[in-house]
Length: 198
Image (cartoon, one colour):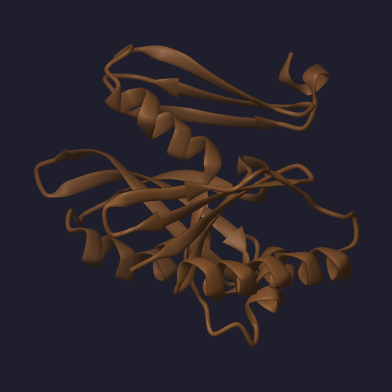
């Protein structure tokens, strides 16, 4: 299936068009206007163009770590399907609002016996309001939500660069920091500006 990977960084949108064999095309970065209504209109226009020109069927959205809450959760489960099904119930005690008001994603950090340690990322559905509004009437599906920092961190880990390290991603005035231990995320920190990072 052809899809568009959308990475939102501050007021800029970076886009890659993906096909069954991987990357098909990278689009030039798109500057986004400040208001939600204007952003909705701009994104809607681009989505329709990519659908026409490239035949995309859906989008995967990459968002800044600052939009997610993140928790390390141990579960008596190991399979991806079981963990995914358990998250709405498990996250109830970790989130201030009902879990069904969030979209959850997870990364299994380690397994031992019949248990797993998982990094769970949760984002409020309302934060995606202007994006889902942009998808209306396009016939395109929201295929998934990703954390841009975790995507970059996974690439760093898979490169074998360092089994134990501190990974720093800078986006505008924000610093996002992750600890890596034994080739797995050990902690995440999100700061809005340089002074907070210190």
